[in-house]
Amino acid sequence: MNEQVDVIVIGAGPVGENAADRAVRGGLRTLLVDRELFGGECSFWACIPSKALLRPGHALAAARRLPGVPVGERLDPGPVLARRDEFIHNLDDTSQVDWAKGAGIEVARGHARLTGEREVTISRVGEPDTVVTANHAVIVCTGSVPRAPRIDGLDQVPYWGSREATNAKQVPSSMVVLGGGVVGVEMAQAWSRLGARIDLVLSGSRPLPRFEPFVGELLLAAFAEDGITVHRDASAVAAAGTDDGVSLTLSDGSVLSGERLLVATGRRPNTDDIGLEVAGLSPGSTLAVDDSGQVEGVPWLYAAGDVTGRAPLTHQGKYAARITGDVVAARARGESVDLSPWSRHQSTADHYAVPQVVFTDPEVGFVGRTAEQAASAGLNTKVVDVDIETAGSYLHADGYRGKARLVVDEDRRVLVGVTFVGQDVADLLHSATIAVAGEVPVDRLWHAVPSFPTISEVWLRLLESYGL
View 1 (cartoon, helix red, strand yellow):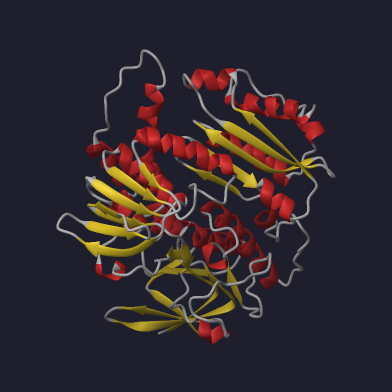
View 2 (tube, helix red, strand yellow):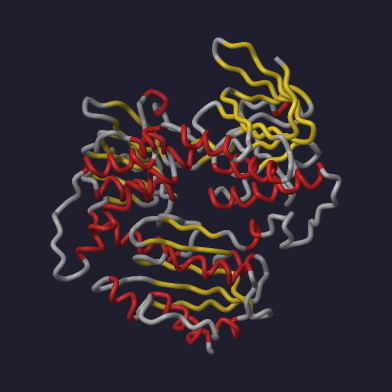
């Protein structure tokens, strides 16, 4: 069977959905194909279920920080897991497929591989292959998969990855979590608050090492209050099965045991088996793209999201996908593409204004560059730190603890990095993102008056500490 369309998008997660949608909006007949669930990792195994698991525990903790609120001692896991299942539609992607079709996107289920220039072969078990040719472009949006470390015996034990951790049907009595990145810290706290005993193993001295140092310090204090045992500067050397679960041996000889072992040691591009060799690229490699999403050296091939290695976050992948879809449509119409910074055809934010929230308690919100990154880039910076002490924060919680940091480029007097840590700070982040992306001068920010009494009053305290 042979078919022909204008654009083929491989990978039907949020990134692929956005790329396909923009191509269709640009007048192109577009095929979206995936071998798994439409909606992808974020909808069913990552962003959505993890936040559904975290939120009840955070709500209970927040209630305990207020007087006069009757709360129980612990969560009831049954309703929490049932609510999680509602959010992921019990792993049924019908609504996602219906959305794609309603948006004018053609859909296909199957394993898609590049088999020629602008040619994709779709394979399905028990059915003949379908060969589809794209008149204009193929866009790869296949995301990422967990990276497993080399540990003796790990391949012989039934350990969890992120999918198993977010989709588990019951609370384990105990869990060893290997890795202090976003997945490790979020899942450690989620399952701890659902009743599991948690050992968290960090390779360094603090969790989230790519963030400002005080982020990890505040998380360590919170984990201690939650009863999470943190093993710092530790490395795992061996794993083995036990009668009750799994054991993990650390380099200092200590042995940790748990009913479950969660390996959360990073992710890598999901490009092992999509036919990259046809385009002269190595299977498993990161797809290096320019700011329009075009794969370097392959004019007909584009990519967006985690496969590019640029900004492996769902929202940032969707941003890149929208730009890539617009670029493909514009070039198909024979229009020139504006590749100047901050134009609609350039993913400039990937370099300067990437926002990220870590949904622990306390929440972590960060955009732009850390102080260390800004200094390494040669910027002349001033760093401003304040505790989050506002009327709004005190109304949110008795004994509120939080910190905020501005990193200011002194030569231009604009923000290049902002970090918030504290209960309920996630929604402060977009204001910071606008300030960084818009290069709003701090003197103009002084006139952006924060509402009283809200946590956003921290902006006033930051600017006052800066010297305004």
